[in-house]
Length: 153
Image (cartoon, rainbow, N blue to C red; front, side, top):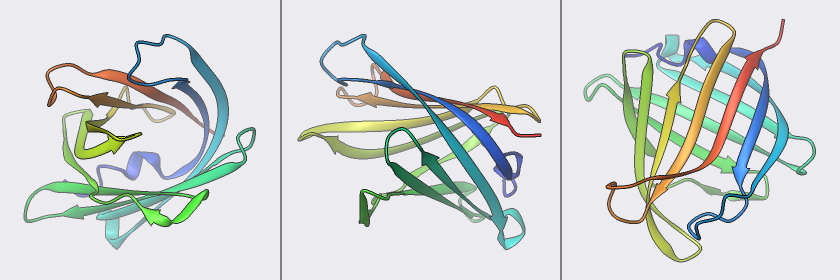
């Protein structure tokens, strides 16, 4: 439903945890901070946030658009290191209760993957996001990036 992402409007401190080497069985993680500022538009049927990763030297923007006819969100990502590269196809999915699941087919370093974004543990002051890859069509998943967001006062 539209307004699903209204919870994220505002400024957030984001604790990132990213797998150093996805899809090779690694358990080595890197941790780094982020600061996200999110806004809504189209009366909640649109949402975007810009996240800055100050210790990594890049930032990104996610634009989320709700399609009332399909009851699905399309999520587009663009990275400041590749400003002409908008995530295409978008991640597409919806919320079921307090959990949002979004999927797309993509590739990682030449390997075809199914990508899953998952939003969960959403409260007025916190939210959890994670990205996972599957190389077997969604039978098994490897989580490779998590973000725990805490709302700034």
